[in-house]
Amino acid sequence: MDAKFSEVSSEYVNGYYKKMKAQTGAEALFLQGVIDGWVQPEDGEGSFEKAYKRGSELADAVLAALPAATPLTSTTISFQSKQVKFPVENENWKQLSALGTIKRNILDSVTTELTWFSIGETQFVTHPGETAPYYGLECKKLMGEGPKFVIGLGNYALGYIVKPTFFEYDTIPHAQFLTSMSVGKQTGPLIMNHFKSLIPKPANE
Image (cartoon, rainbow, N blue to C red; front, top):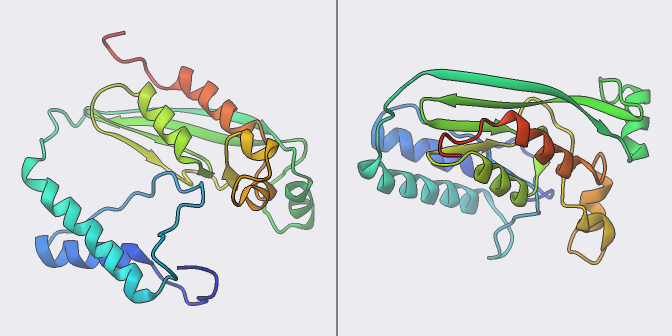
């Protein structure tokens, strides 16, 4: 769906939750992954009916995968986090902070948090904004084998986090809008540099 709808809605996740509940009787969990890059369906305008259908189709895929699911061999929880600073190259963020629209101190840099945690052999990382799918795939490479999850908008919401090329070539579709809502060009590469030290290396390395 898009901005022409003003109603509050759980969007396609609504269809997912309802079908999972109806089919399993259990409470389902939906974790938002990387959500940047302007990923949209290509089959015309959105609607509540279409969003519900997409969620229902997601539930179908999950239900089809359940019979082959492998239970975790451990439920041990491990957790690591890191406070990091990102340069703020976008003056709009500084102005919104000065006006009190954003309730946090944003000057030449902004402090945020990156986290890695695991439950048994399943690993998770959080991204403090709406990252491009590229950064999610790169994080999964760092996590090695086993189930891996990237949680978008985890802990913080620092706008769009896109590849530096979006700042260099405004002919990329939607680049001007995405970069106008970004803290700056360096955010994505810095996230990856920090995760290289935050994510434990796989045991076979």
